[in-house]
Image (cartoon, rainbow, N blue to C red):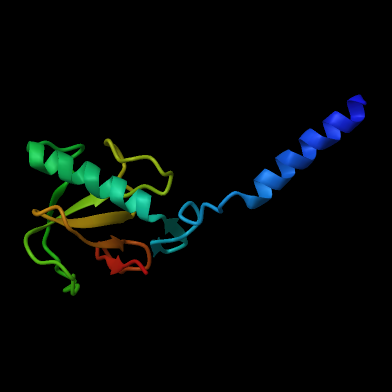
Length: 129
């Protein structure tokens, strides 16, 4: 009798796990910088943190700061651009080494793009895919 109840509970657990919707967002790359995959939530979180500091007139280790677009990227939004680190660890940047990757946002809080030093020459950037 005990075995039958245990088997029934296990069967219900397996069935519910198999019918649960897959969390595609957790695995989908919204942007890839070199070999680093960033989800749309990670990009949004980095942009939000950067914009929050920008709008408060604050910085974390000098970020965000104006991004001059010396490389001539064709961003889909206009305006003055700011860059803010996006970290491959998944944490939101709060100071220290910024790593190679950046989110670019406008002063109207629009995402312009994601760029990286990975694969670029010197201190330049290339667009993430």
